[in-house]
Length: 372
Image (cartoon, rainbow, N blue to C red; front, side, top):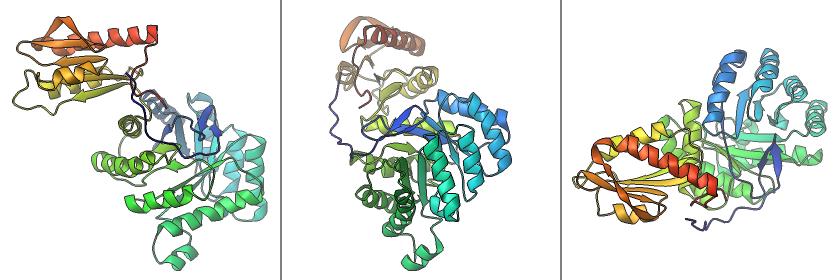
């Protein structure tokens, strides 16, 4: 069942990170960053594979040294997704990873140094069709901007960003994206709003240093949700002090909640109360773990009683409405004769969901909340 999405995306220039389109109404890309030592090639590749398996479109890898650049060459050869190299200050590292096939350079041109060094990096990016991400952070603004504004403000972040943008403009390089991240939600949101009006390039969204899994997820959901609902943002990273795989899960949950992009099962579940006829919480938790391998977007409702159960089930691909001893099953919005035993719900419901996923894939049924 399709729901029309009321969000109108901000028009932007299309760039490509590897084979992933960014901007110009392309699906909003979800990315994360490795936290392994880059020089530990196997550990980094293993983590990239886990992040990619969770659905990541792009992964960023820090490349702080020339040794890390040599490791990056081996990592790039084994990565299943495009890689962004995170580089600060040393232009030689940027030139080396460009040679090794990096898909995007996260480097601020103004921090590289002399004009000839900036030009060398931009030329390497141009010659190899590599886009650049300009990344401004409220916690690391240039000293003169800090002195001018006294503290990080939206105007300060955007002025910093535009310094780097102006350099690329002067060198006639337009394939870049920009982020203006801050740990404060309102500072970040207003900075992105200002920047969105000043450039045509795509925007990379993030609330930097958002916090741990729970608090960081909440903060990112609020900040990114405000911007995405206004049509601002073309790719995003949820920054959590947690396993990078969790960043991808939360990123997709944010997009899913706004009907922007969906991946995997979207569980609609009641918080449970004394009316429930089975243990809703344990059932949903078990199903989420068992069905993580499914990438097909699909709504599944698991409601513990007959008050809201049938209504939610009618608008889900698979629905369960709790009842005494045996609960009602709905498939494709239709009540089934088969009823599921409340003592064995997880196994039965998993089987029904997997069967429906295969049916949907085979018959190409439009289910709600697919990519915009």
